[in-house]
Image 1 (cartoon, rainbow, N blue to C red):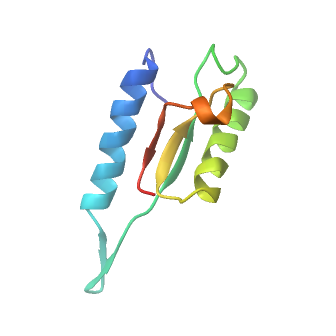
Image 2 (cartoon, helix red, strand yellow):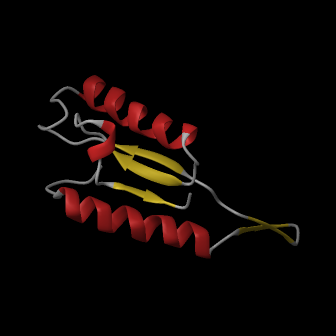
Image 3 (cartoon, one colour):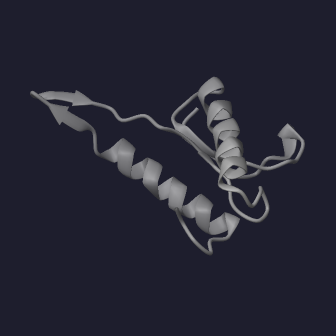
Length: 91
């Protein structure tokens, strides 16, 4: 959990985290395994107050990434899908 982060700070953190995964493959018995992630984020109070609601919204954001290219992240929001500015990762 990250505390007291703005959407811009979350975006920067997630971009950095994805780059770290991409730049550091897992080496297992001399085989290089690329690490791919699909991460959904939500934050309080904008996306809910209860943990269940926040997890649900983060899951929705994660599944959006899984169904649209994988290896990225999405911050949950309630805007029209065309207007979603905080999405990142490889396509």
